[in-house]
Every structure is written in C-alpha cells, then in structure tokens.
Length: 249
Ligand SMILES: C[S@@+](CC[C@H](N)C(=O)[O-])C[C@H]1O[C@@H](n2cnc3c(N)ncnc32)[C@H](O)[C@@H]1O
Image (cartoon, rainbow, N blue to C red; front, side, top):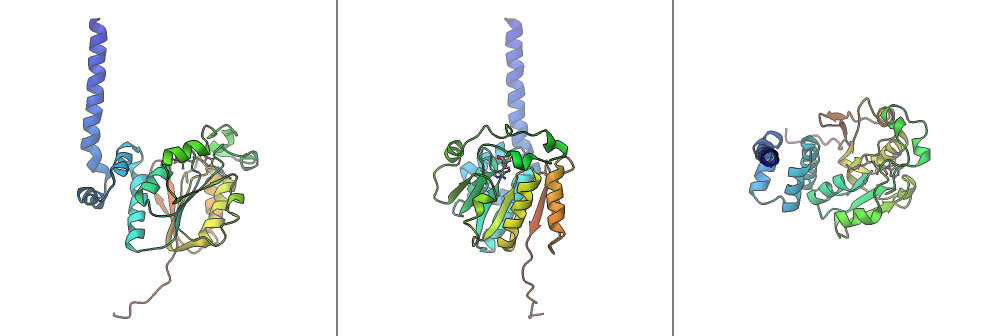
C-alpha cells in the first residue's frame, strides 16, 4: 500500500511539475505580438487552448504571424488545406480566422494506391491503411459547424476541378507524397494572390517524394522559398507582389 501511495504521489508531482513548467516555458516560444494580442483579448479561448496543446509551437506561430499579416494587409482570398486527416491543423487555421472561407481537401480515408506507387524514403513504407482512421463526418464534427468550411472529399486534384476560378491567400499542403504535393503546387500557386503564402509540410530528407515535388516546382517560379526550423521542416513560398516604386522618395 505504501508503495502504491508513493508511486501515485510521484506521478502527481510529475504531472504538477509538467503543468507548471509548461506555464513557465510558454514565454520561450511566443512572439511578443501574440502576448499583446492575448492581453488585449484578441485571441479566442479556443485558439489559446490550441496553442497550449499543440506541440509544434514554431509551426503554430508561423501560421499565426501570416494570418495576422494577411488580415492587416486586408488581403482577399480563401484558405485551403490539402491533407486534413483528422483536422488538427485545419482547426487551428480556422480558429485563427473563422470568417475566412476555408477549402479542405482530403480523401478522408487515407492515401490512394496510385499516389503511393513509386514513393521512396520514409513514404515507401506507407500503405493505404495509413491515415485511414478518420472520416468526413468525424472531421466535420471536430471542426464544428461553419458555413465558411468547404469540404472536398475524394482524391486531389480531381476534387479541385470545379474550382478553377478560386483565389487563395493561405494554403497548407501536408500530403506527404510526391504526386499530391506536385499537383497541389500546380493547382494552388497560379491561384495564389500576390503576397499569399503556401506552406509545404515535411520538406526534409526523410520525405523524398515531397521534397522532390517541391524542388522540381521551384525551378519554374521566381520566388525564393524560406525553410522554417519547425519539427518536420515547413517550406514557405510567398507569392511576389507587383513591384510599385515608392514615388515619395
Ligand atoms: C499527414 S496527413 C495530414 C495531417 C494534417 N494536416 C494535420 O496536421 O493534422 C496527410 C493527409 O493527406 C491526405 N492525402 C494524401 N494524398 C491525397 C490526395 N491525392 N487527395 C486527397 N488527400 C490526400 C491523406 O489522406 C492524409 O489524411
């Protein structure tokens, strides 16, 4: 009995310690502008909760800083995500700007056999079972009711065929494989407004197909991408704005 009490006490202390450390270390990871926004009551309770919970703070704040800039610039265009899975990243992006139309592309039943063929590196071990433990209904429920959320279940890029005239300002590509990543860049980049951003997740040596798709695509565009030091390597492509010389100088 004494041992059980000791173990339980120790567990309690560990949990308490972790909680206080997370409160203390919060300040290590957040930009000043976030702290000010929280203080001014401009961050919703739900988004704040996601910030506390989400393990990749650098990725979180890379999104948030771009969303804030987009809002400040009054830039038009929709948000989109290719690769939603259970909706974790989509929920965060939606909470960052709930009024923005947000297009969500996923099979909601994992990868397709055709996309998997020819993959090398880490993704060569993937099968149709990976990321299949989700469903459109579950993601809808998780993200909550909003007419701003537009679901496109099925295989991309086929699911974007009716959206030739859409314009995007922020796109999160997180599809892991060569074919959807390449197709995503080809579809979204020409429809990205000037100053708009594309985030490509998993740009690292383990995800060879994803990295190859990005490298091939970058050869054909003028923008120089920026790699983030987040957990899995996110590459940001920000579309160039038209250069307007400052005539006051
Ligand atoms: C890594 S998960 C996305 C994780 C999610 N962004 C997050 O952070 O919570 C990759 C997703 O891409 C989707 N996917 C990959 N290729 C696709 C394609 N061609 N069409 C639709 N969805 C695809 C898979 O179904 C899977 O759910």
